[in-house]
Amino acid sequence: MPSSLIRRGIWAIGAAAIVVALVVAALPLIASTRIVRDRIAWEMSAWSGFRVAIEGSPQIEVWPKFRAILTDVTLSQWTDPEAPPVVEAERVEVDLSAMAALQGDVAFSTARLVRPTIHVQRTAGGFFLPARPTGGRITRSIDAARDVVKADPAKPNLDRLPTEAFGTVEIRDGRMVASVGGKDVEILSSLTGQATWAAMNSNATLSATGIWRGESVTIDAASPKPLVLFAGGTAPLTLSFKAAPATFSFDGTASMAENAYFDGQAKFSAPSLRRVLEWSQAGIAPSAAIGSVSISSKITATASRVKFDNTAIALDNNPGMGALDLSLGEAQPVVSGTLAFDTLDLRSFLSAFTPLAPAGGAVPGDVDTSFADRINLDLRLSAAHATAGAIQLNDVAATAQVKDGLSVFDISDASAFGGNLQSSLRFDRKPEGTQVEIRLLASGIDGGALGTAAGMTRLVPVGPGTVSVILKGPGRTWDSIFDNADGSVSATFGPGALSKLNLPAFLKHTEQGGFFALDDVSDGTLPIDSAEIKATISKGVARIDKAEVNSAKTKIWLSGIASYAGRGLALSGGVIQADQTAAPANGQQGPNQSSFFVGGTWSTPFISPISRGVSGE
Image (cartoon, rainbow, N blue to C red; front, side, top):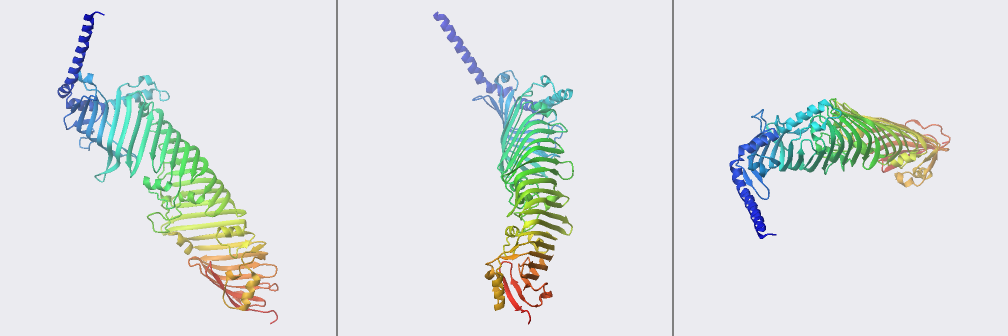
């Protein structure tokens, strides 16, 4: 190669390097003279649709990238100059195009808002959103896309969508505030995120983190047709929300028109439903420690109604399936549907709408039925297996209803204790206070199994029987329900046995006289032909109207009172030999009868013999 050609190439490269160096050196000068503050503000206004004001002078950096650093930047509404700025940022970093700057233009693709304060307003739907811009490229693009959607809502012509560039907006260490009572209240803090939207007709993504009500939250959203979505058309959308109290995700299609709707697969999970309700400040504070809940469902949602189809739900790891319907058109939300479980903890389920224990800030034992003022509920439930405390149930059919201050949970049919069980729990909020009604009907059950589940293993008839319980009373506290209840208890049993009673030893002690504990004669079982109990409940005290146990050779009877509050006993009774046909009235002594008094408490009863009559005396 000729040396002259080599020399000319070296000179050309050197000249190009000098030109590049001069251009780079000149950029700050060009920026300081031609890309002035007002020009940047104008371009940002045209881009955002807000009135942009920049208090500080722009600083231009060339390396590692060409950018302008702006200070004390505000974005305000054009239509209301007296309103507070929509955005106030201590610092805004704008990545500029060097070639556009050399031509006297401003072109940027990325804007970083450092420590911005975003003013939001509460919408009718309960969301906090900033004011909408009244113009700008974004608004014009949405208006143009709206015409495209109107022309063919089912299949809009995407080729006609605006193609203007948008770019990337980043937020670092920002916060959202809302005006409440004339004062700014912080809604979200430590806000950091990025929205990427290269061009109006391209896909867009959003990712942000922040602190909401003391918990760190992460939000991610994406759509391949965001402009169609903003224009009121239908477009694919993925959305996820993650926080320690709960997670939520949606994958489907959506429309943000006036009649907005969502159609797709949604998932929700929370390790503690109680914590979610407290954190969300929904005004519902269930007092029992409700455990985990997870829901996966196909949803179809509009502004007034959400349908959950093929719903998989798990309460405290008890899986179920069904369908739910949430209506938001009335004064109170209405939830209805059917759910079927393989196993179900009824106590946890009840806690979701009728608290079974005091809330954290409530007086111990208080019954909180405020849930019934905030939601209407109508659910049909079934469970192959269920538990209610220590009670095991099978083949359960139940309903849960909440409406206008009334909460009702009914078990219309269930297998338990070898028989059939029906039960009802009713809370009715009235001006004079909450009234509670409890009903239980157990038919064809094994008395021994019922007694074991109820913690009553002493003197319980073991055999087939029927038990009926009806209690009504004020429901200010759980203790007061039973302390002040009125109602009745009745039970009948067929052939079986009376547990923990050694009758010969009992009779021997009564002959000897003196006090003795019932535990002293509990090492036996008495075969019986039948047993019957009838009691009237008044203010938490049971007055036994009839209590008889019949066996082949004896009849045992009791009468008197038993207190629920103090667990005290004041009973009289007798053991009649086979030749007696009826119990003497009012505990009077009869021939061949051992009479006695029962005192003490339910857990530690004692016997005081009265006397013993002998036939023929």
